[in-house]
Structure formats: structure tokens, C-alpha cells
Image (tube, rainbow, N blue to C red):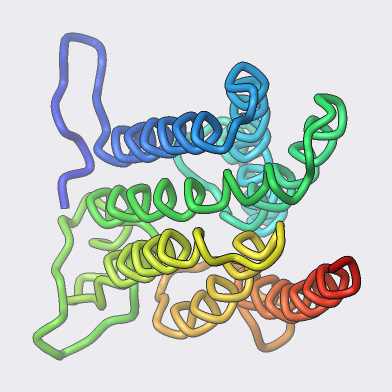
Length: 253
């Protein structure tokens, strides 16, 4: 729980930003290596990575503003430009849309390209979640169990004044496990797009469970949190797409 790593004159290095940056770099090197291994044009893939990265951050911020619309009405500039405040699925959806547009522009195979990026998303996000723990954001519910972690009073989680479930670490572990599953299945995938939709399915289902143990305010749609609702919808879509692409592959044999 170290929100600030160190200060250098007027500059402050935050652990959350550092972990996100490390995650992005790890994801980038994975994508570059996988593109080289599978015979893709690495320059096109690098350009695509930048588009996906930028749109991912934009989408995450946009959905955050939408979820925190009451705060936005009271503090519009701080809500938009303040430090922190991202919703993963906002970034994921916008990055996917922009990514498909760029893939078409670069005349690349859509599902083969998406499969290259998918494990990178999982591992980058897993590392970023460690940053959430160090920053004290995206925290869990209060608990009296031995799992409880007390955060510094100045952190978002510390404001509750009670030990909390370190759900950020469980979320990170979940993503590392999904990353490992994708790597193991990568040589055995039966059709292009399988890794991507498998990730959408596994993450959607696991995120829906993880959300139950979250304690931070994050918006709701009916009885579900925003990410829980989106995760369930995308998991259903993933099942449909896995079946559809699998049948198309069998018909083309």
C-alpha cells in the first residue's frame, strides 16, 4: 500500500501509474514477439498496438465519467482530467472497436490479429491490478478474517477505516491464471478468434464473481454493478461467438 513510490523535485512517481506502464510494456513486448513468431508485419502491429492502447485509456475514462455522472456534474474538469478513474470494460469495448477499424485498414486478418493481442491484454491488466492494490483503489469489502488488509488513511481504501478484502490481488491472480490458460491453449486452438472469445468468456464470468466482493462505489445497472452487468452480457456473447466460429471452421474443412 504505497500510493507514492518516490518524489523527484516537482515530479511524483505513483505506484499505480508505474504498474500500469509496466503492464503496457510487457503487453507490447508480448505482442511484438507473437507477431514476429506468427509472421505478421511488426510495424503494422506496433501501430495497431498504439491505437488500441490510446483508445483503451480513452474508453476507460469515458465509461468512468458515465458511471460517475453525478460527480461529473459537480466537478466536470476534475472528473475528466483528475488522476485515476478508469472502468476496464469501457476501454476494452472502445479499444476493440478502434482495433477492428485499424485491422481492416491495414488489411490484416481480424481474428488472427485479435488472438495475438488477447494474452497481452490479460497480462497487462493483471500487472495493472497490482497497481490498484498499491494505490488503495478498487478495494474490497470490509472483513474480520485473516485476509483483511488495512490501508493508509490517505488512500481511497483507507477512508473506510477497517480491514478490507484485498480483492485487487485476487483480481490480479485471476488474470494471471487466464493468461496462463491462453498460453497453454494457444498451440491447440481450433479456429482464429478462439483465444479472444475464450478470454471474454472467462474474464466475464470471473469478473462477475469478483464484483460481489468489491466495496468501492462503481455504479449499478439494476441489481448488478456496471462491470458485472457488462461482463455477463459479454460472456453470453462469447459463448455464441465460440459456437459460431467453431461451426464455420468445421464447415470449411
